[in-house]
Amino acid sequence: MKTVRVVAAVIRKDDKIFATQRGYGEFKDGWEFPGGKIEEGETPEQALVREIKEELDTDISVGALIDTIEFDYPNFHLSMDCFWCEIVKGGLELKEHEAARWLSKETLYSVDWLPADVGLIERIKKVL
Image (tube, rainbow, N blue to C red; front, side):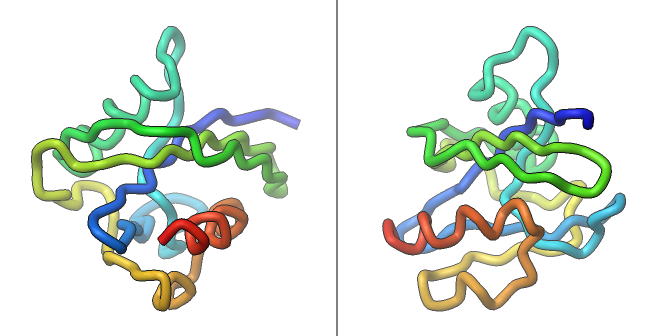
């Protein structure tokens, strides 16, 4: 099975985190943490900075690694490095996503998370 390596930004502001709804592809309408594929020659942190700039026109600082989620989808294995991030500059403009929300500890489960992202929610909930 093919492995896809990606990064995800858990953007935190006060006691809320930023979630996005996919606007395209096989998992359209599912909720996720923004990010994307790591390109050849990039570190996970560099990939995350690039992806958030491309997808949300926002500059971020990448903090600590929260976890690496390993998840088997029907057609591929996903390896996702998830980092705490903060906004440096920009307004999180949706360029590829259908919708976005700031979620609190109490509202983390109010969206329909993609399967790989679900594994991260309890870890985040403990920190918020």
